[in-house]
Image 1: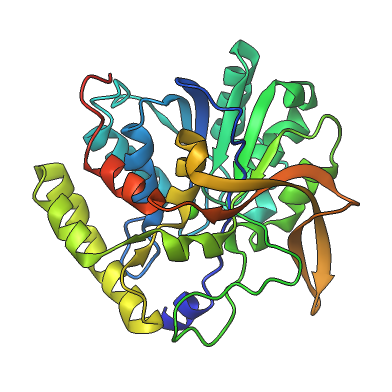
Image 2 (image 1 turned 30 degrees about the horizontal axis):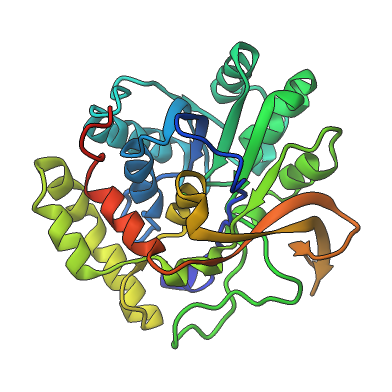
Length: 321
Ligand SMILES: [Ca+2]
């Protein structure tokens, strides 16, 4: 497991700063897990999204990724039941998606629920895990492609960028959400027109968005639900410190949620997204010039961004439903 952590693939998000308004309707797809020695950052991103009055959560789906789809289904459902009350979505169902990248193209409850939601009204899609569920939905229902207002992927990198985090990180990280299903991302980029407006959020940005031990202990005092969640996350947080020498746990997926809820707190630039081969492996690159699909790349977080994430974890702003 430690070796797995060392090689932990990161997912980077796609966001559309400037396009998001209060009450933005989103579908969230997540590989949330609370299993020991797995990356539990999806759990924090989900709480952050549930606390965000900027978002109207239209639907939720689970995918393989950090763990099995079954584990993601269970963990996501538990988070939503415990933290979704203030947003009025505690009873929102979580739809089962793909069990692996081999399921690309196979109909699942997640692909059909997403299709139904898109037929009802356009929405934004926030992928906190591999893109298999979204690509499958669009392959099965290509007529719905224009109804995606935007897609945020936690994936991608600058040309030539090596993903490193912390002083003890001997190996570059892999771009986890991308590398778990490159074919799904290829279908988004090259599978037909229009290409949904893409916001790519590189995993390396999470070095500036950490949850410190003092943050976790403060959250644990806020409510029985936070005490429950914090208890699942202490080992994760210690692991980051032991393995990589960073101060806290890295909140990869929170950066993507922040890019949607607080677009002014991230720097994003127009790019061209394409898949290149490097060392025999595919890489999702966001380059200043083409060829490639038009996209925006988050290049840095602005001062105070991590504080905004931590504040949102504490609760939904007073007065917001
Ligand atoms: Ca994730």
